[in-house]
Image (cartoon, rainbow, N blue to C red):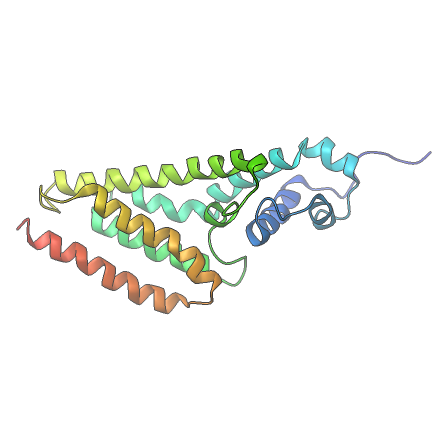
Length: 204
């Protein structure tokens, strides 16, 4: 009798890791079920749905794994053991380094996975935007802390500064995909942080 179900060699963690690389490289909508199944060891469609229920459910699992691994570089923005300047600077440099590494697709999965999508997949874009909003909140809290403890003057335009750093952070993805080196981004971060130094002198 022919065996049915997932092959004995099926490893769920490895399957999710393989799917993450595909979604990261090609985006949610452009990644096909055939590509996902092939990356998982040519499992059958039945085995795929038995394991993950749907492509969207798999993508949600992929997002969780990405956030708990590669996405950890963003945790620097909420590290209150650091000064606010150090938290932002280390967060930006860490993100730039991670996104330019050659061991995985370039850029950030949360930024690139649904840049363009059909109206039917709008909820995927919204799901990713919700995750990016968490980082927005960390940046906001970090800069608010800097104003509260005197690192930055009370006159600091907090929303403007958050937008500045967040725009740079999300822009790293397209720069990485276009082949801009980590060294070039690192130098740009040094210049960007000089604005913080200029603002900080106003609070002295």
